[in-house]
Image 1 (tube, one colour):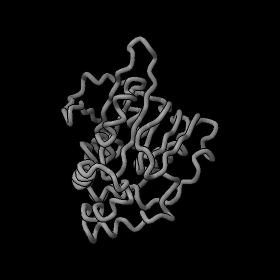
Image 2: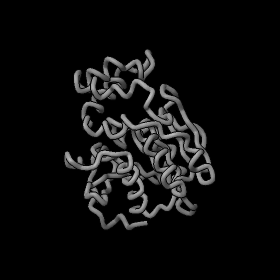
Image 3: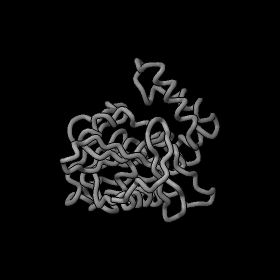
Length: 238
């Protein structure tokens, strides 16, 4: 693993932010949370957040997971503390997968457990198919095998017409139950409004990725899924 002590960290929401530069010259930010017993061997766990979010969205997962894993959280390009690429830069799932692989190279992880939520889950599936040797296990939350036959394919045009916050507010029942805490809903809308809409398009319009087990059944030890609208907490062991 690289020595992080030589880097210049900044503070964001109480967490130390580390950065690295991708092969297409974009600065990406990531966080490391590790409260495991120092005398025990620790396995790395990578958390990938949804579009219109950042690594801080997964805050509730960290306390429990970081007691048992070395948790690495990435801000996807154009999100959170990561840089926004130039307008003419590559916008593709392949590029997002490269970002994750390059992060793993940077922190010295040959393979990791991965938990991905929504768009983060789509990226995780593509990594598992492209480089299955790097994925020990895969936990997916609100992330099926693709968006081709879902209403998500029409989201971008509606966002462009209505604006991101009004669109999300109008469709909030698609994301949360009717009894959701209003303060939580307002927090979600505030957080989403700060994200870069252009880079939300990175993950939404892609074709179905197929079943991960078809490409990586010999390498990925376990795949678990929580459907959209299900419990957003990681339950049990990865």
